[in-house]
Image 1 (cartoon, rainbow, N blue to C red):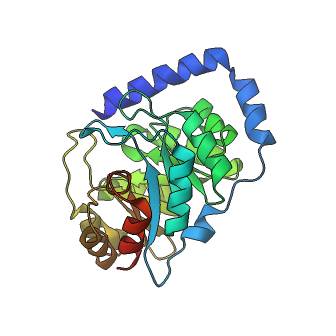
Image 2: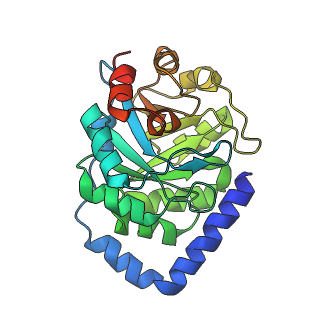
Length: 256
């Protein structure tokens, strides 16, 4: 599944690059105002923090919500107390787009994460050009050299990399490149099965100073509490918010 998603994302990026070549996108990225300091806003606090996701669909669940106005949803997330907004930009399985990210960026003053299957410099530049402050790098999808170079590029553009992991070995690789924002995804990207306890089994391997993000398998406040007890500083939530009243649900989740 991961290979299929990655191949599709790269094919779509090549089509976009034919329309907007790398030099033009790089120039647009460099012309953007400075990225917001996501690390400062996601640092551990007395209460858990939430990255709220704009997510129309997923390979595992199919269509979730139409989200005709992603900007309005992002404003609701900000009103509800989210600390950052994640925007799915993958179009084949998640029905997202960079246009969604641009709309969200224009509507809120929170850090915005580009959530996609990123493996090339072009994708990093277009993330910044669209206004992303954070870019997702999935360790399982990248060899060491590519992970290192993309992390360095994102950093040079002023962005923060959310480095996603699924095992102790992947956490070690994330730390080797200097990641300060590390996610543990409960969803196995090969089988798409969920293990809600994976975060708790790996959190102790993340040193102090690294912001710990729990991803996936959140349907209720009890799930947020489960991750918080296990050591999560931040919880990324998508489906539970797009299928409910987002403001009320965020209030409930943040109350844990």
